[in-house]
Length: 127
Image (cartoon, rainbow, N blue to C red; front, side, top):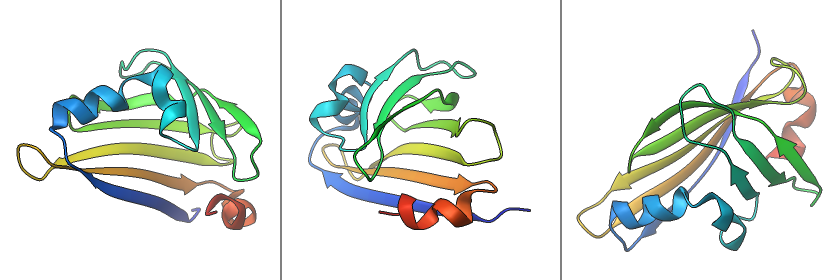
C-alpha cells in the first residue's frame, strides 16, 4: 500500500459561484490566472480524458491526459492523472467551490498524490 500526500491552496473570492465557475471552466483562459495549469482542452464529461498542459516546479512543461472523475456544476471538478502508467505517480486534482454567501466563494485547488514514485518525487512536487 502506497502512501498519499496532498497539496492544497485556497482563496476567498468576492463573486457569486456562477462567476467563479465560468472562470474555472474557461479552459483556454487558464494561462491568465493559474501558474501551474496553463491550458486545458476537452469536455467535462465523466469518464472522458482532458488534455492538460501543466508547468512543473522546475518550469518545464508537461502534457497530461487525466480522466474526469466527477463534475458538479458550480461546486467541483475532479480528475485523475498518471505519470506514464497508473500506479507510478498518480494525481487526483480537485477544484472545489464553497459558497460563503450569495457573493462570496472559497475556491480550493487540491492535488492528492499516490504511487510508487511518490517518496522519490515528493520534495520536488510540493514546491
